[in-house]
Image 1: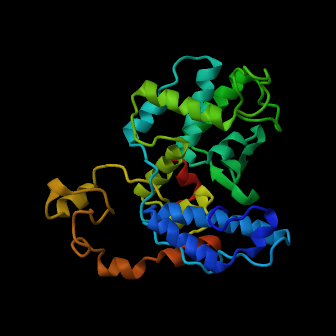
Image 2: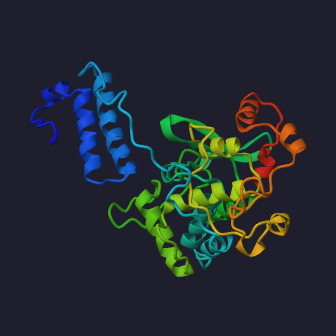
Image 3: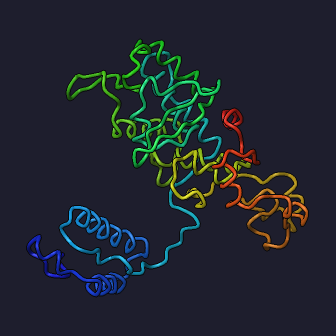
Length: 326
């Protein structure tokens, strides 16, 4: 608005694509990162989409404006190692209500790749069986419902928490509730996102888990990274996470894990082997440890695998029961 000299709401109708392109050039001249420029253009585009939907403006001036390319191969969110995840799960000590609730919350985070809002909105009835397998009924972004298989350790922690809390029969009530509420005193409502954030940060400090950029989303990234490292199908992990783009890889910072014995043994320099696929490490050239020709012919590509999954066909993707063991 300052760039275009807008002082009244009606003047938003005067903004054209040329203004947006000039503003993008100014941002690039300031030396801002491509991701920052993309985010700002996205914010303006969302504003005009809303105005178009309300019939306040005729067009979106951001439509058709090219956004600077950003490195989308790897995100900024860190993923915890297996040892760090175990330390975090064991951080809540004792047999009190708070310790049991926190163990259940951390297990739900680390094993199911839920968002903060999705975990906070879980109800008691959200844990139910589907075809003999316990599932979470998750209300995701865009009011989209998905069903996530419950990991046995998390299910046991939730059962222990509900037995102590005593609200198992309140099917429409919140699953995870505050132990104390200094502001309103109400304990029947769901735990807040801020409360979840403070809880994770405190237990991370207690367990000695020091990771740059540690946040609630890091636990979601840990679950997705762990699934991919155990040969889970990418398309299935995307649906498991509730991500719209089935073909995009979950963006999390890779964690340092040893390669399998076959990959390390086949690497020209095992001492430099770093995390990559099961057949190739990142230190090797792309053709050094290529997939055998026969395996390439018989394996489905990611797009065909996604189509097969969506159509209900049997593919190499993990079943609901197998996911409980990830």
